[in-house]
Amino acid sequence: MREDVEVICPACHESIPLTVNPAKGSKTWEEECCVCDTPIAVRLIVDEDDEYTVEVEEVSEEEPEAKDADGLEETRVTCPACWEEIPLVIDLSAGSQTYSEDCSVCCRPMTVRVWVSEDGDEHTVDVEAESD
Ligand SMILES: [Zn+2]
Ligand SMILES: [Zn+2]
Image (cartoon, rainbow, N blue to C red; front, side, top):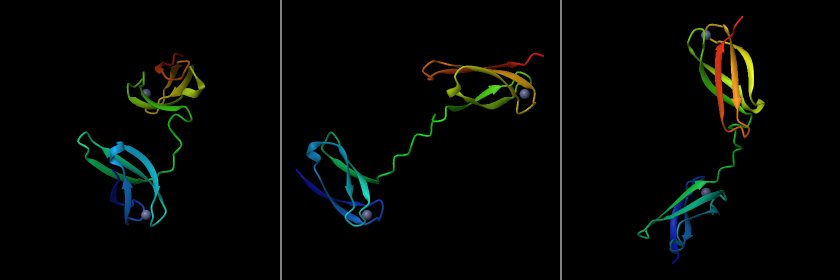
């Protein structure tokens, strides 16, 4: 059971013919628009009553995952001196570490203790007032 449908190309917005085969169930594939030659992703969704919908979208270039790429994680901590909540960027790629940081609100130094699990999936951050 092949069916001819018309879809709107997401790139050139022309109506283009497409042949789908809902009998084989839902699937996703790539097709080139016959008008503008832009590759488009076609998604055929067949529901339980054999009704089907066809969706098209422009094939997007795979974006490299920026998340966690540099190991920087933004967190919020409460300053032990002024009790303000302040943002803190920690470098998880450096592993567990203890260092000194000045509060961005009251400028008083505090000790930041970062614990990172061996696989890097978990971490905790503790801050305490710097003793002098
Ligand atoms: Zn097109
Ligand atoms: Zn503070």
